[in-house]
Each structure stands twice: as structure tokens, then as C-alpha cells.
Image: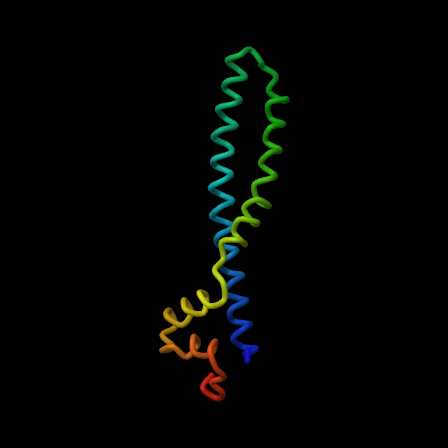
Length: 109
């Protein structure tokens, strides 16, 4: 039997973890993309290609970073049992949340 309060708490916690992971991955991948794009721009400039406006079009590749980071963040979020164990430990519930996954604990929840 599932408790609506437990499901709501887990959904909120899952969403906050996904959002933090998305922000972390977006910043990391954007920095990585910009680093390699900077190397490519320098290589083009050394090779004799000096049209700066055309080189700036490569920054449109940066638009692909947030959706990619979101997909990877959503895949990295733990399942409900692991999230329940984390919440149970951090809130010092004494195992009540984890036991609610196994059986109906009734008024104890």
C-alpha cells in the first residue's frame, strides 16, 4: 500500500535531485564544449580562416548542452527505494520510511 504523503515527498525529493544534477552537468558540459570550441577557433585562425562572425556560429552547439544534461540527470536519479533510504537516514526516522515500503504501517506514518 502506498501513502500519498510518501509518494509526494519522494517525488519532490526526486525532482530536487534531478534539478541539482542538471545544473551541475549543464555547467560542466558547457565548460567542456567551450574549451574545445576555443581550441577549434584557434586552430581555424592559425590555419588562415579569419571570419570571426562565421566562427561564432559554432556557439549554437551550446544550445544542445542543457537538453543533453537533462536527459543524463534524469537517468542518474536513484530509484524510490534508494531515495527512501536517503530520506530515512537524513531525517533520522529510525527506519519507518523504509518499513513503509514493505508493509502498511498505518497510523505510524
